[in-house]
Image (tube, rainbow, N blue to C red):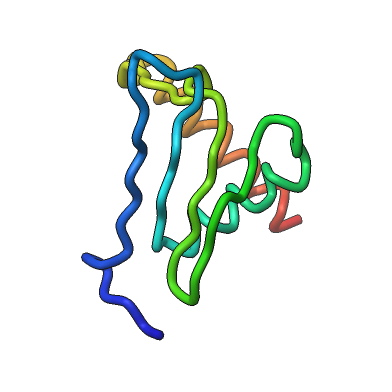
Length: 93
């Protein structure tokens, strides 16, 4: 079944009273990432349900992460640009 981009949702659910979070997704990219985590870390990540278009996973809520945006200075941006130029030149040789 083909889903629209809008229908490819991911929902993370947890509360203060429990240690686990539940993630429901219909996004195939998220499924692939979590399926890899389930295989690599079976004690931490569990596949708890699935149907033809969605999967549900369970894991410790401490693995849900919020990050502030990365601040890149002008100097860092210029160094990265120079490194990419040098890398591309090395590939051409």
